[in-house]
Image (cartoon, helix red, strand yellow):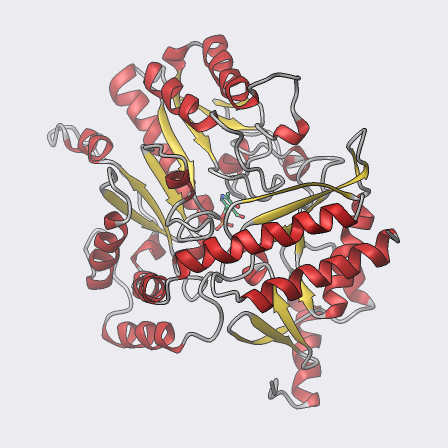
Length: 460
Ligand SMILES: Cc1ncc(COP(=O)(O)O)c(C=O)c1O
């Protein structure tokens, strides 16, 4: 593909980047001597950088986002048409794409009822946290205000979202944090904290133990990722979710599922929680909602929660006194409608299940070949490969070598990911999450590149 930049234009872009951009998640010293990578064009599952080099993107835009792939003209057309008709009005008023998308979304989420539009996953989670706090004040004299989160989970980059963040390395140097957020233990069976026959039940019971320690009348909500993403691609153990749901019911605790990564098809169902037959009170989503064609995130809740916010119109504090300016941008829902239609029309949920099974199968074959592979996990097109220096002790592979695998794949023209600055000493899981349009050839090519990289970096 032609990147269509003359050498002159290209060097101006690079100089401007080097002089003025502050990239996300990046130590910038290396850019004093190396050029920044600039992604110029994308089509399907592939992207091209400023040198014209083609890459197969096995991480959907780096962070599990571009679910329907690049270059979708029908999404761009729908956004353009909507923008020239009506680009923005505050969400205190409605919009045509807003109501249409809300209806389509709720149709996929039995038991849920109300959609609140915002811009990012962080913000969607913050809205749910605020609602929990307000319910505590309205119903329980402020007492039932604590929000439980899980070790290794991530819910966003603001101070409040980091207060609910279970990744120590990500949080370091950003405290003090917001009070009232309490950690529960992780549920990664490969790193089980005890030896037990039924780890799923044990891990869920640890949540109950925290609730009892804190006092059930102080705990308002439990916020969990259905499959933990950046904390190591953690698929929950057998029996875990059923028990979690029971515990929430028993202590009248609202269940908040963070679907920012899993939502809109990533695991092969519309939502990750639907894999486990649970019924949440809040579902937050962002990345795949419009596959990055527009910035849109949603906080979705039940009619029961919504009803609590219109009980007494004579009370000036009775409603959810919250706004997100750009939650009123119509580009988001316009893009999200087309995104959802593409997933339906092209059978991408089915493809995710089939290709996800192929991806896991290929990765398990790599585990037979490379002793460095300790554990392979995943659901749908959302997989992780935990690398260990020693299979018996499960000592994590050194982070530098994990990064060397990522760099080797990049040199081969494959963009893969790895857990990064999350858990000290445990940033050792490769992340693979290609677009939901991936073909069998794409999957085989991705795992072949990982195979070659493992051989080169670890020599076996
Ligand atoms: C599970 C989860 N929740 C929330 C977020 C935050 O989303 P955003 O970066 O859109 O604020 C992320 C981002 O990676 C995430 O992985």
